[in-house]
Image (cartoon, rainbow, N blue to C red; front, side, top):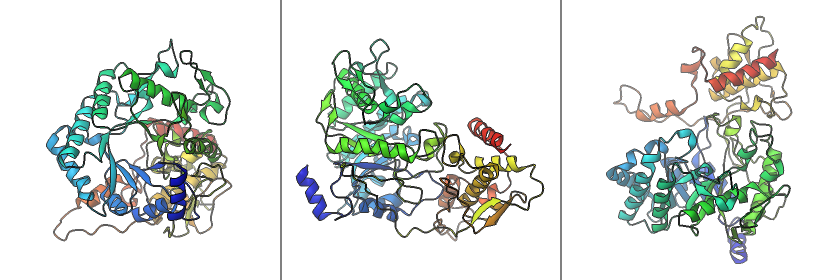
Length: 510
């Protein structure tokens, strides 16, 4: 490892970050109203020596930007496509369009195809149980038929809830796959072993803390504190990551594959949206994780072993669902515009280093939307704030979050500005029946950043023969969080989660 690090230091990214944690990757999500151009993101990856990325789809613009870079890529079949992929002909078409199209010389360095994403998550109520394994088989067999199956492997990223330990023996050595999915999991891991593919699991120590005040905080990190001793093996666990990882190892062993490689598909710490989600805790978490990985410490059941991980995630994503919690939009190690949030040392040496931010970022003009100080009738202020939050991102206003300490008008201004920015600073998006006003004065306060959104890409050219919206423009509209023309003054509506969240904000206005 010393030799490979020295090689990287001399040949690649001289003087930027030195050696890297071996095999360190990152998840590149795109559930955002505004995104950096793919080529800008690829430049950011290269500038920081990130040599592996995990995608959640097979976006052609991203794959085109990755071509010729040697960055290892895991692209994905989405959960929505799983049923379609149970048809082998459709699977072959997908592989041809998204894999072999890019495997020519100077193409994309594709290593894995993720078939679904956490398809057996309990929250899905079994909706993907009957389609995941057939889809996995078809994708791998299609890769084999295309002549790339030896180097490109199909696998499934699972949530850590696919395994557990029984209440009577709640230790890592007793880990097994859930009884309701054991037979299917056995088929899947047998198939993975047959095709020499790894098992992928997403592990989130933050979620052990979220909503559980009784969970020992230090156990979520890597710097000591409370520990448990496995009553069967005698192994001591000082952090929940090792315990979770070894529970997975035990589950694989119980399924007949104790030596199967395990890749951690997602791991990270959010920086906003909850009292435990902040940059200080994220810095603490990565400051423990990266040295552990760099030293190849492994875990008690796999001591001294290399652990391959993909950090979650690259950027904040303001259009993600908040069903898991308000923190869900804030997992990025970079902000929405590609700027580092906190020091990170990818060498694992614990040095106070800063990541390289995105370059040549293009923003909208320096304008913000604030509460109109000249407004006389403020009776609808709470209603308009609710509307703005429902159509944008107010998660930073929640309890313990970065903007929670704003006063009442400050919170309303934050909501107004988020809606205004999401709608590309359209003047109509800062009207709110006279309650909003555009200002050129930066109204950020303390830890609360009133952002200016990224400049949107130019619209795709429309076919002259088309009498209506093109498929591309329709897709763009449906994937966007909001548009001024369609959301300027619609009727108010919100999910139960959104209503509960806004009720708290409204209370704080009083």
